[in-house]
Image (cartoon, rainbow, N blue to C red; front, side):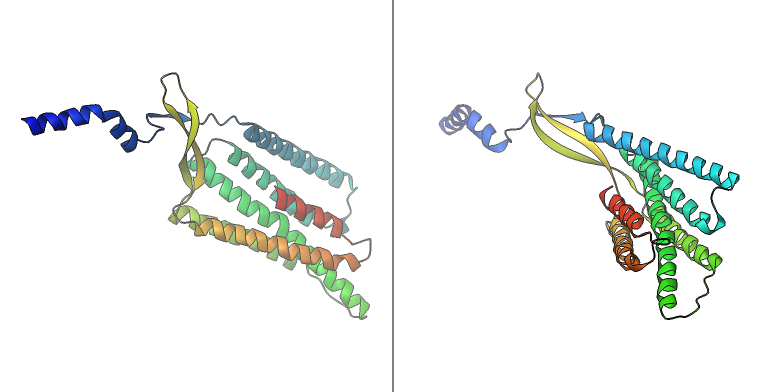
Length: 253
């Protein structure tokens, strides 16, 4: 009896110290969902909507001038149309990323951004590479035949490959909303530490995102090389500055 009494007495006297050493100081905790209305989210939504409206306005203005005959056939309207389609898809994907993550928004953003970047950059790169080839051949007094249908087929083919990649991704490891827990230093009225819960898009394997970003980086590198080579082209066909702006905006956003 004396041993039991001594044990209980020691526990009662040291209970606070035992609890403090066994239980983390941030307990008890409570979860609070992220409202999703952060300033960064609002800015992303605004920029996405502005980009969508600007793209639609550009398409409308280009189509109106084309109907009036203000845009000549030599302006390569097909490549400009592919560029605008790519910009529109990227804008839609950016808008979906700014929304609350879910299965549908994550999948839609992956499709729009992958296909959009490919449709935006690849046709321009193919057109620029063809112009560089013509300029170099002209310096050597050689004749070069450029088939516009072949260039367009190659441009659309890369977009089809991007769509196939997104299809395989969606079938075998579909993007989904994943929860992220962040332990804050704030406490509620009951003294509970607040744990914020935010969601983001993810897949079970990170290799999908690695391949996606690697392909986009490769496109930007190749486009940068073409923009550098384009500087020696005549001013009438020199699109190096426009290509450089496109590379910069794609890298930043």
